Every structure is written in structure tokens, then in C-alpha cells.
Image (cartoon, rainbow, N blue to C red):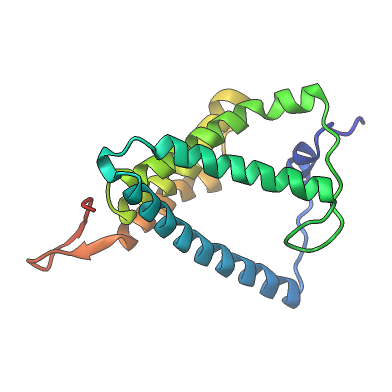
Length: 188
């Protein structure tokens, strides 16, 4: 059996689930909490940056989104060139990618960039709550891309979770209005 050529595809094809020890579970929980905190501040940063760039009438949401992607790409390339993972401080080698590896991930890369730009632009369209609802739809978008372009629909369990994810974020964004009724505010 010939192994897949791309390490990211190899990771996706692994079927054996690893049972985590108590310490590993704690580490995953800590990393999840740090991700959530970082996402919270990232959303606020985006809203402030968009407001400073002109708000709803501004001309720079694509520039801001593109700059963020450029910084992320530069960070990843620098980590590989230096040979150090900035999260774990472990050695990290530059991946050896073939042309076919790059071609295999190009579609997902383009749609991921569009999803990122859409999440930045939605922050400009209304409140941070509205942006969160749009961002909560990203797993739905990913499931559609995988189904349409790669012929890999989500499992039934994953498909059943998608509306729950979006609905959960929508419910979390509810705020009471003057009459005491809960509603989602789309105003800045």
C-alpha cells in the first residue's frame, strides 16, 4: 500500500482514535479555552480595525482580511524556516510538498481564504454577534465544499451537529429588547 503524499491527507486518513490520559485531556481543555479567549479578542480587534478603517462605509475590509492572511502565512513560513514550532517549542521541519500536494489543497485553500474574508467582512456588516453567527456557519460551508468538490460528505453524526452549532451560536447572541423579548441585534 502506497502512503499518501501529503502529511495533511495522511492525518485525515488515520482511523485509529487515541485515548487521552488525564493530563492530555487537561492540555486539550486548556488549549480550547485559550483558543476561545483568543477568538474573543480577535473578533473585537477585527471590529475595532474595521471601524477605524471607515466602518460600514469603509473601503478596506478586503485589505484587512488579506493582511491577516499574509501575516499568518509569513508566521508559518518563518516557523518552518527557523525549524521551531512556536506553540510547543519543538523542532519543526519544512514540509516536503510536491506539485500534486499543492494541487490537492489549492481548492480548500482558496475557499478557506474566502471564508476568512467573509468572516472579516461580516464584522463590518453589523454587530459582533452577527459576525459570530456568520462564522458559526463556517463548518456548514466546509461540509458543502468537501461534499461538492471532494465527494466526501460529512458523516450522519457530523451533519446532525451542523444546525445545532449554528443554532447554539444564534441563541447565545440573543439579547433582550426594550419589551423584554429576546432578539438578535444586527446593529453596530
